[in-house]
Every structure is written in C-alpha cells, then in structure tokens.
Length: 153
Length: 395
Ligand SMILES: Cc1ncc(COP(=O)(O)O)c(C=O)c1O
Ligand code: FES
Image 1 (cartoon, each protein chain N blue to C red):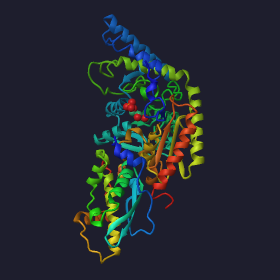
Image 2 (image 1 turned 45 degrees about the vertical axis):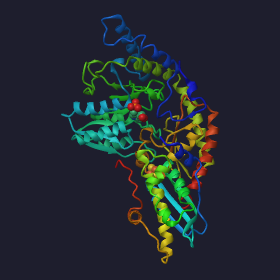
Image 3 (image 1 turned 180 degrees about the vertical axis):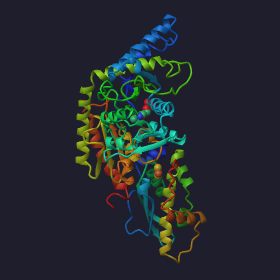
Image 4 (image 1 turned 90 degrees about the vertical axis):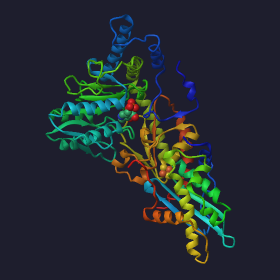
C-alpha cells in the first residue's frame, strides 16, 4: 500500500531528534488522535536560512515518513522557501500516499510552518512574506490541536 | 499441493485474522472443483449425489466437533454471513414477540454493525459494557433482559484480546427467560471445546478459515425449534434456510478442518499457550511501560494483546514486517481504518494508549524457536520508535 519512498523514509528516517537550543519549535497533533509531531529548527539570523532541522514523531508509517521527508526538504532553505512547502509537495516527494493517509502529510508541513512562525514571533523585526494559507492553518490548529480528520466518524 | 514454501522465512503471528489451511484440507478441496464438480442439489444423477455425499459427511464432521446433530448445521459464506443471518433472521422472525436486541460493546463488527443496522430499522438495542478484561458479566445480561427482549448476541471469545465469555451462564439466563441466545464463536470453533448438548445456545456462528479450513466458508448452528428467518432467499437449499448453490469444495474442507482441529485440540492449545506465555513473559520483562490486555487466564491459548506506551501500532506492525514478522494492531478487519479499537476503549483503556496496541495470535504456523527472534526484534523496534516519539517519557 505504501510506495518505496515512504518505506525508505520510514525505515531510515532522516533528521530524527531535537536540535539544541532551537530558534523555533513547532508542535502539532495530539496523542489522542494517535499522532503527534515536534519540529525544532535552527535559523541563520543573517540570511534567514534553516541551518538545522530535526523531528520527533509519534504516529503511523505515513506520519513518520512525511516528517522525515519534510525535514529533508526544509534543510538549507530560506524561511520563505520553507513556508512554501505544501502538504501536496510532501506527498509528491514520497511518490504519493494512500488516500486514507493523505491527511498524515498535513502534520509535517504544519509542524514545520509552526516552528517558523514560532521563530518569527520571537523576532518581530524580521519581515518576511507569510502565505495566508499558512497563517490560517496555524490558527485552525490552535483551535482544535490539529485538523486530524479520521474520516469515518 | 499445499505450498507452505511461499511463506518460508516469514513468521506469521496473525492467526486470528486468518490461518493457513491444513495441507490435508487443501488436498481434499482441490478434488471437488473439476473432479467431483456436481451440484449438491442435483441428486437425481450420480455426479450430484457425489457432491451431496461430500456435503453430508462435512455436516456430520462439524456436528461431531460441536456435539450436536447435523440437522442443526447450515453452511454459509463465513462468519460475517452467519452473524448477519443470526441477528437479522432472529430479529425479524420474533418481531411480534418483542423489539429488543442485547449485545456487548466488544463484538466483532459483523455483529455490532448488524445490530446497529437493526436499531436503525426500529429495533431497540442494548449494548452491554465489559469489564477491564473485555468480559461480559452474566449478571448484567440478567439485568438488561426486558420482557420485550427477543435476542441476546454475545461472542464466545473476543478476536482482539482473546477473552472467553461465560456463555454457559449467559445461555442459562437466556433459556430461563425464553430469549434466543446467539454466540459468535468464530474465534473458538476448533480451539476450545464447545459442547452444544450441554450449553444452552440457540445460534452459533463459525468461520472455516480461522481453524484450518478455507476462506469464504462457514456455518450457522441453529438449534432445532429456534425461530430464525432465512437471510438468503432463493432456490431453497439447506432445507429452505439458506439458498444458494452449495460451495461444495469449501464445505468439504470445512468438515475436514473440524475433524482435524478436533483431533488435536487439547495438545495444540497446550503448545500454543506455552509459546504465548514465553512471548508475554519476554515482552513484559524486556520492554518497560507495556500493558497486557485481555483476561490473564480465561483467554484463548494463542492470543497476546499488548499496548506499548509512546508508540503507534501501525509503525510497529510495519517495522516487524520489515523483519518478516506478521502481526496486527487492533483487529485485522479494522486495521485499514484509523479508528482506535472499540474493544480496548470498551475495556477502559485510554485512547492514547490504545493507539499503541499490538496483537500476536499464534497458531499452526508457529514454532517455539520463533519466539526469541520476535522478542529480540520487537525490543529493538520499540526502542527505536520510542527514541523518535515526542510523547514517550514526557508525560
Ligand atoms: C469474532 C469474529 N466474528 C466474525 C468474523 C468474520 O468472519 P469472516 O471473516 O469469516 O467473515 C471474524 C473474523 O475476522 C471474527 O474474528
Ligand atoms: S497521521 Fe497517519 S493515520 Fe493519522
């Protein structure tokens, strides 16, 4: 059911752990839903580039694989570039996800964006373009932890 | 004929989902496709009579295993059909007597969904709670029985945790009140003794692929005189109770599987529980923060269900699969969906913990040497996944 890419990232997840003295932290998900993710980033203050990114994830195979590839995609990117990483891009990077697992890819992109917003909240002098959609999703996830819709309810 | 080689090197520990057919069963079944291919209802000629004989022998083999008469055994397409037939057929046939159906919170979806459906059709439904082990208290059945109750459906043993319900007591209570008692015995047929001459059960579901028979075949035991309408209407096979051309190969295989399972039931249960206990002991010793689910004693011999704190079930199943070990998380039938297990929730296990459930069900494909390997792999996997988990050790 999972692609080779998913299985690869699941078996050998990249960037597992937490960066020391992170500049930004993004926590999304909820153990009651069965998945939770924490992304920590280190940001170069001059050129606003992500110099280090790590994740910790509790979740299904897709949640772990999407976390892994998201950190891989974000590493070395500028904050603006990283904010442009969408869940579609994450799913595509894994050669697709089974339909009932597409929602899992939200978790990782949201976690990354939240870590960046956290960094920006501590550095009000930094002015970059934050996409509307990112702001909206982060507000939504504040409201109900994360929009993890487990379908069949 | 039987190709056990195809799964060579794989450690299969999901026998509650399905079990390999006995090689004797596979060999027997294959004779009944293009060899003796007759329609078991076409008894005017020899080819049909041969099939009729095969079915008759199978019916006697099933009846012998359950200590009942062969006139009370009706072949079906499996556990799901038997459960649906029992619930639906009993409810409709007894509608004039009353309107209430009683079941338990931990039934297989084949019963639970069917009962809920009957509820939407206007029947009243009572869903009984279970204790921390997943067991139904007979006293709760007695309390719940109203004058308008027409059916009680309580499973014999639970497919997820293996807990065995006190069906003797529950059956006696139902008999006292003249209420039909159905039990889903899909996990117990061929595994633990069932003596229908001694226990009061009106309807009992069995599924062949769980005990060495073929998939897509099963039976419903219906006590003589139990009022149950047919579920499949048509050509009137199975004495008008279950229409449809009989699945002769499947039925013949079902009968033979009953005979084989019955011939070594006690030895096999002892063999499985020894391995299961070894696995359980090893897990509890080597992996911290693991909760054992199900009844410590009144449990099927091959069942082991645990919740591993701080890890999600699917990720463990996938990691074990990469090590050529097949197990399931929660019920195999619901693994594709993302709901937490309704069985574990009904047992009072917190949702967070229930997501980390892992079910090992041992059976004919297992040997004692496999246990240390599985223990070793599992310990490593849980360690790796916990190191990756943001919740473990955080609470
Ligand atoms: C307790 C129980 N009832 C019913 C079923 C359904 O049986 P079948 O797969 O033959 O339809 C199963 C199998 O998953 C089961 O474990
Ligand atoms: S994150 Fe994968 S099932 Fe919810």
